[in-house]
Image (tube, rainbow, N blue to C red):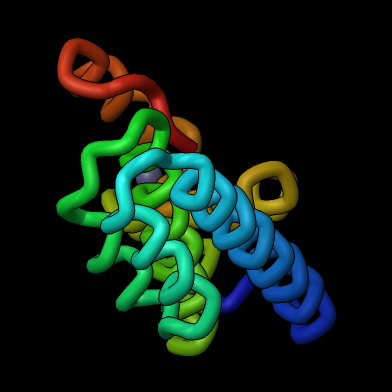
Length: 131
Ligand SMILES: [Zn+2]
């Protein structure tokens, strides 16, 4: 594929990194607002930990809304990883082009709209729609 220009990639990377920073802030604030000492302890670690470790830290926390943020954090991380490997914008399921308009709206999208729609229908009973 390689349909994305350098400029588009840079733009998407910027969006992904901004989203990552926002998610970290949200996660940290939610943890700090918790009454549990363990949560506040983890909040202190969220800021400096590598992104992968943040996801790990949150994996066993059962805080409202946290699983959703942790999942999105993992999605954004995966997108940055695909960007580094040159596969951002390639659908994970069918290998087709995700398309720039969709990436502009959802830079972390891992699937084209057709595959995502099919998947959401399939998993709708298990989890809410994501990207
Ligand atoms: Zn697809």
